[in-house]
Every structure is written in structure tokens, then in C-alpha cells.
Amino acid sequence: MSITRRLTRRLSQRGAVLLILAAVDVIFAGALAGAPAETRATDNYKLYAALLPLWAWGALWAAVGVLCLALAWTSQDRLAYGAATGLKVFWALLHLLAWAVGVLPRGYVAAAIWLLAAGLVMVISTVPRTAPTEGGQR
Image (tube, rainbow, N blue to C red; front, side):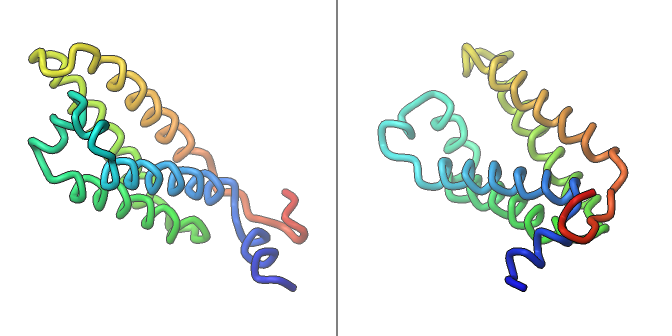
């Protein structure tokens, strides 16, 4: 049996969501850390860089993504769900505050999107873990 098949057979629905979150967080980490000059010149990226170097923001997002990836196949996934939720809430509040003080005129848009994403993660985190069965069907 291939390793891919063995891994997917052991993956619960909660674990599958953590893999999706891991992908989102790692992709966003790359977008932060590897932003080209024209992107770094935008208001959002200027704000991020004023608070922390972009590589540090990228490392934070990547760390949460790696945590989600690492815990996707375990039943002890609360830490991953908590970190994924917390980071998205923090990012939303950063944008909301920047909008409120006039730094990001449309920061409320990003704040709403990230808060909604955090809400979705929170709801999914309450779904009971389903045990994978033979053949990957539940």
C-alpha cells in the first residue's frame, strides 16, 4: 500500500480541514515573506513592515501552517485549531485597528474577511472527530 493511501486512510475530516488551513497559512507566509517591491509599496505591506519585518510575519504564518500540518493526523488537534483561529483573529484586529486610526482606508474589508475565516475555523473546531474507516470512507 502506498504511503499516500495510508496517510489519507488515517485522515479525519477535522484533519482534512487542518491540511487546508496549513496550505492557506503557508501560502500566505510566502506572500508576506517573498513580496515583490511593488507589493511591499502598498499601504498594507508598509504597515506590516513597520510593525515587524515581512520575513517575521511570514515565519509566524508558516509556523501556524506547519503546526496544522503536523497535527492533521492526530486526535490532539486543539492546539492547531486554536493557533489557526488566534492568528486570523489577530490579523483581523490588526486591520480593524489600522482602519480605525486611518492607516488603512479599507482595512475593515480585510478585517471582516479574516474574522469570518476565524469564525469558520472556530465552528469547524467544534465538530466531533470522525474516525476514518477502511478505504477512506466514513
